Amino acid sequence: MPLLPSHGIQSMLKEGHKHFSGLEEAVLKNIDASKQLANITRTSLGPNGRNKMVINHLDKLFVTNDAATIVNEMEVQHPAAKLLVLAGKAQQEEIGDGANLTISFAGELLQGAEELIRFGLHPSEIISGFGKAINKAIELLDELVENGSEIMDVRNKEQVVIRMKAAVASKQYGQEDILCSLIADACIQVCPMKPTNFNVDNVRVAKLVGGGLQNSSIVRGMVLKHDSVGSIKKMEKAKIVVFAGGVDTSATETKGTVLIQSAEQVV
Image (cartoon, rainbow, N blue to C red; front, side):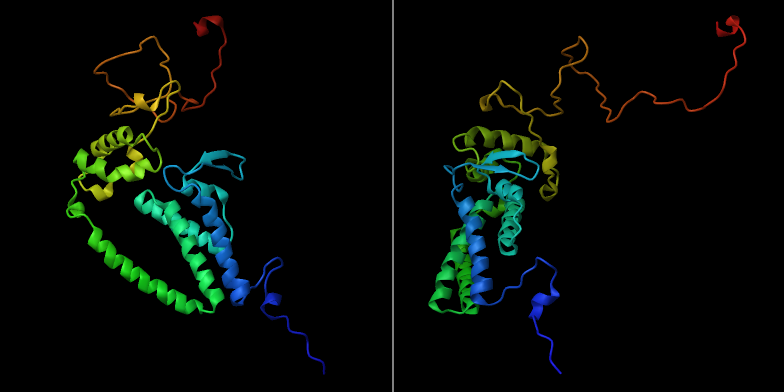
């Protein structure tokens, strides 16, 4: 009795799916995909990083050197490269900066790992070496921590400005002095009693045509980018109410029929 030919796991997958195994097919292909992503973001690293032009699936154009925006709009599908995207997003959400460094540094580590694999080292040995390097790096970083940084007063403008300059300079190099002062003032004004409950949505940015960064200022309240409808342009100590919806009545509450028999009844 002839046996049916065996096609392995490939026969159990949906059409279009592929199965890879081994160093050449799986590990090195994953490393190559991750390196390609890192090469895209690497040239945007630092204050003099170059801008990238990205067009997303909605045909919306982005010109930016922010790695978090770049990888978000690229819609990376490769599983290994997507891990780097998730790592960059986690860094951006937790710290607010460093997404590009995370992706680029991971790409460099994988580049070194690829060379070691081609020399004959097993991936498990490389992973073990990376683990030891992490422990050593943490040990060295603990020695470099500035004394007193863990007891920062979040309502002290000078202390806040010093700690945010590096992050702001990576986005707006040369303008960090102006921006840091504005950001610190805005954040301190809306900072809750428990700083860990800070809501970033309480600080908004409104752009006005015709002005520059030097004209920026902080408004404690609400700014509407519309001209006033009436003739009154300025009022002090006014009471203002804001409605999220319309105030007109769309229909009457009751329905009825009125029969008019003469013109006198209308009057």
